[in-house]
Length: 98
Image (tube, rainbow, N blue to C red; front, side, top):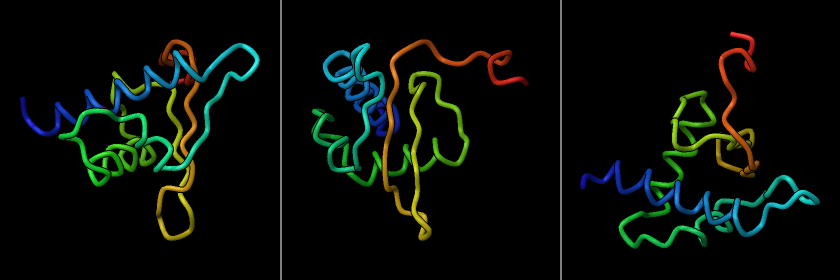
């Protein structure tokens, strides 16, 4: 398994854990910083740098099918400030008005 695949698997597993554990009907969105998110990545092959790279790609508008309903806010320097994760199905092209 290559590094990119391991990184996507690790980030996806962390997101599934957050959705299953922390997101409820009462609290439909989980928010945290990069370190709070990284605490949910259990694959030792995945580094903080790898996770930041994936999240930066998502914030730049790149679409990763496995990683839907993730929103990344950056500060004025381009550093990841907050990560928000929602539960639910991914948006379709019609939902996005494309």
